Amino acid sequence: MPLVRSLLTETDNLVEVQGIKDQSTRAWENAATVTMTLKDSLDATVSGADGVSLTYLTGSNGVYQGTLEDGLTLTVGDSYTLEIDVDAGSDKIRKIKVKMLAKEDIV
Image (cartoon, rainbow, N blue to C red; front, side, top):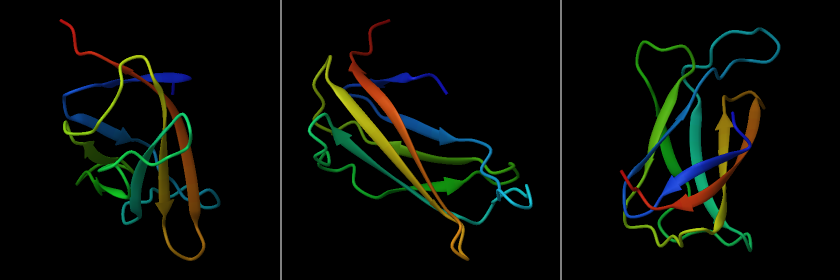
């Protein structure tokens, strides 16, 4: 994953997490509970982006998708952190943090 990803303002943002595996067995985790929370540069949760579920993509190997809705209040140029929590049961927990930069969707 790149160090900083773009977060488009005033549009839905599809988030996809790929390759979720059990670290000891290397088996794909296709039944995990995956959620995401978007935080601003002050570590405050963005309203409407707390505990958003990601759903397993049927037939994939450890791929989960979820959407950050277009109604989020984001400021162009501001930094955000997307925190993704994976819980595969039996104390198999993973936290992924991705730096995001809010941008306008200009074509």
